[in-house]
Image (cartoon, rainbow, N blue to C red; front, side):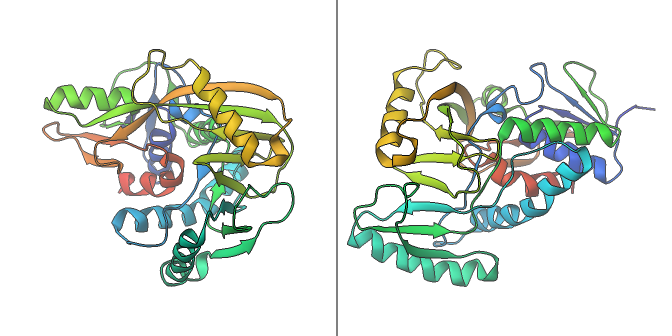
Length: 325
């Protein structure tokens, strides 16, 4: 008799969320990753849990909305079970409104949010106030109450511990047993492309920086295409780049310097905050830009969970459940 019912290959946010959901249902689970927990993109520093815009509704946006709402239960549950922080907080998000055209679009989306999000969250137009407000030519901002943030490495570390407390194993190597889930990120997309002899997805490099500045409890910001994230541990993360061509997957360079310069121009409060960490890593982008979830074609008992490019943590609560199903 096998020791495990499910083997998850990959200790990132998708793999660990699936392991947790399976373990909660009574399955004997092991998670195997040669790099350890959060070795890939899930060990980043930004952690934006932000929704798609409330318009042109489709199944992907509906899936993400459901997952963002499930996060309000999942992450407090993990913290209570393990006694370890995840950095989760639903504090909303502010975005500048550049001109009259953007204002008209924001108002249409405000109506869309009332219809599509219902009482779960709101999308409002507000006046910019205080030094945390990003620069906005109109003096107005979009505030959505659905956005949340998380500390990525803390979250996957706590999630891994939760799997262990449920009787699961987290290891760097081991033998596959039971059903096999491949949640192997960018490397996994490359393997699938080779397997099917066609492009399935690719790695996109991201760079981000962590600043020493305590703005905990403030909303996250999205300005000049950048995420500015006030974490609960008294730091602020800024990111990120999206690089399809790169020489050094984990090295930071002038592209990150540009990100920091733009962020400091956009938000007065971070202008003088010192940088305490620079980070770079590869994120898995599926060709469709939607996560790939389901059986591996032609491999009985093997499943794929990949492609969480930029939205992996936001999608994870529901990904875990549907993959366990």
